[in-house]
Image (cartoon, rainbow, N blue to C red):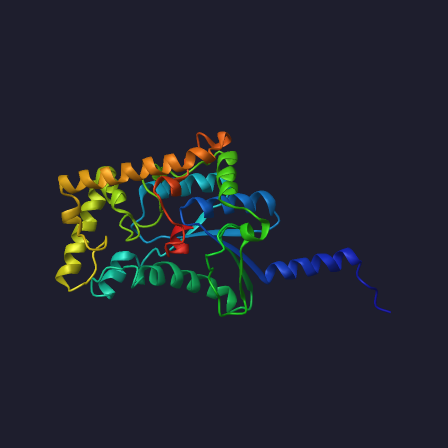
Length: 298
């Protein structure tokens, strides 16, 4: 009679086979939520061999790249960069120099979603189940995640499933020593230097902190106008007008009024445990449900 294999050897073979048929990935946007999720997964699910990735448009803020390097050090793993050959300028030419906008988000489709699909397709073709972990929080009922149409792609929301909210995200970043990316000192969103979801004060800050990037955005806007694009980076106001000294002064004054309004509103609900922690969404009076792109913002 043929001898049976010990049960522990059978279990080991089964676990090896299961590992070969599964892939775990987590997208890093450069923002606070996805960074916190990467930290959370490393701390609470160390048995998962997660591959981290970042879809690089070629137009990212220097602060984003710096933060990614710091995060790689914390995780002890590299963050795979996608889009090494087809960046924003390539697709801008493909779309006849028409700028992306909230109405036509070709940048999200071409620079974020398609590269992700192409990347994971290598495993799905081999019938490997890909688990993608997305940083939608427990307090974001209004956000909808990515709905895959392939049976081998499973999207998971650990924060939502484990009850982690915005406070929890801040706590994770603070406790890990990573803190917030430096761009949160002046900007409320990660992503491209000239993201059209930026607020006007953020364009002013971009001009101050990265003048070359501002000039490049202004040149792209001028080229788009010459090619008949109906959109400017900020709705109804080209950067050539926004950068005028009197307009900048008005934008600053409006922003200061919003800060004062927010501070007055928050006094009644102050949390002394978070006295030194800036809530960037409150600072910029942001509505997180403003239809900004999950894959860029999160």
